[in-house]
Length: 497
Image (cartoon, rainbow, N blue to C red; front, side, top):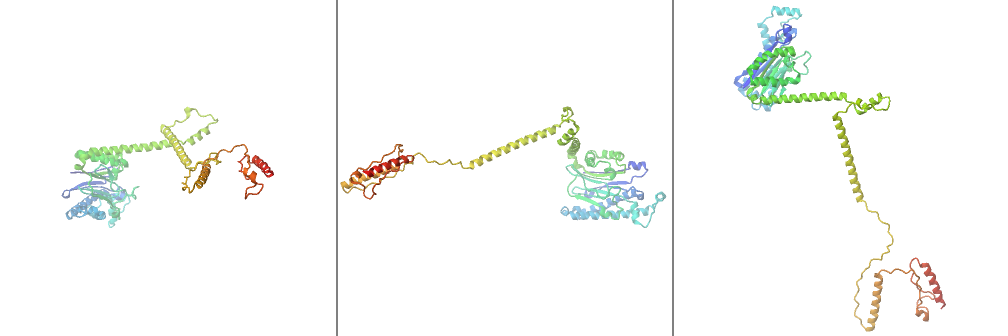
């Protein structure tokens, strides 16, 4: 179930200047295809547009007729928005809307010319043109269109799709199922400062803008600039949900009456211009969700207000707070001596700044600890990899380790004499081996005197040795001098003998 409405009221400035309401509006329904249409138009207020109030009415009439025919034709033939594949081809849908806009412009122009023919210029109009030096040229169609100049905004809502059309200023708003409202048609950047696009322009077709969608929405509104300019930009969308959607869903008839009464007050508080509004709300879809939707909008508004206040406070604080260096320089410049200012004259540091400094100091200390720990670990690893220093080598006073050599078993003796000789030879070899294996006893410090062999005393020099020479063991280190002298004396005595 849909609820639709439309309302136009004379603006406060028009009442003061004794000018008629130049806005028009209307809401329509195509029951065969459950389609609802909301339209508003704003006739231009300049002197040369002295029939713009008729032009806005003709704009609403032309848009309704063309859109209604478009709905019926496409619905019967399952084309346009009723084509099952339409959502997959946005360019085709946009092309259909362009054709609709072209037909609206053509229909409006025909109606303007027909209206002039049916309603010749009155004496009051002729006096008005004479007073404002306006020359009417009957054969100049462009001038005829300008006299009826008007903007146009239209919204169409069904169960399965929606679209909006706009030329000139004003606002088209759609409300999604989650309660989020948005401007459906972006503003025309070329408009403003008294310049607006119009059906009377020669390039009117190029100046049309539109939007569409195939999702289900719960509302759409169209307003003239007299309404949209009466609100701050950030609150107009909230007005569509909190005031219009909520009240029309809960009590539509009472809200229509209240709207008729409140629009003139809105114009007086706001733009002063004529005000027109028309809308469509899907009551069946919105009613179960309306309380939550309104709560969500209010919460979003609070969040936005808090963010705005926070930004303003940050800017104010930034203007008041000075960096530390600047503050110190300012204080030192004002002081004639090195004495510090009393504590009472120092600006208190905000708690937030104190906490920030404290956190920075803690973070710096932790960083230093981490760096120190990392350096210690690195040092330990580096030292562990180095080889320990080698001690200086000196001759060991300890005896060499004993080497055990296995003894060979002698063959059996061939004769007693040979066995005795061999046993004595084996004992001598074992003694020699033992003497090699065992460590040498410490060398006595006393000098060792070489005794002459008894054989040498009787027989003389042994065979093979030079006469007059005696073989002696080399003395140990340290006593070499004494032993050498004694050996030389002994050799001398031996030689005499």
